[in-house]
Length: 165
Image (cartoon, rainbow, N blue to C red; front, side):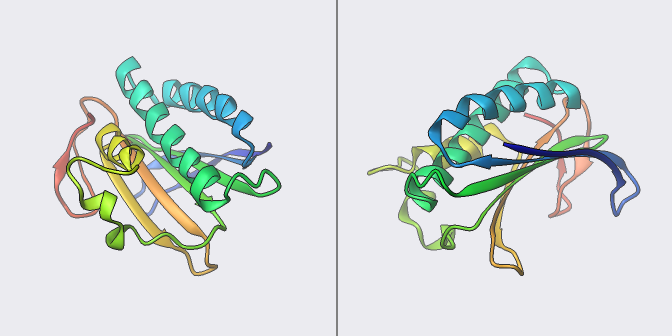
């Protein structure tokens, strides 16, 4: 595991934030490390205990999908987690270089009751306040997870007022 950060930055809307970036091998044994890191950063960000557990679930499920489906358990490959600690939220970016995933075309993403797998994606959506996926200009997959801090009311990307789950 390679750690880069923390680094202070100012976001586009002027909110000060801390950025913590880690690079992790895709070996399943690293999941324990990710859970511990997620807990510590969640606490640092000011999430309550329930929010920290939700964050851990979302990151665990997303990382498991990268390891299992993206990299097919090839532990020689790695992926990156970027934690952006902002005044009103914690944003987590997971980036990998596996083949692009097409969530809109995946049956299990649109299913209320997932069948044949896909429960992890449902858990991710239920555990965090926002989930976005894109393929970056460099061709990496990027999953964005957002947890709003309890009691903080903010407008998300769609302009909807939201508070933390």
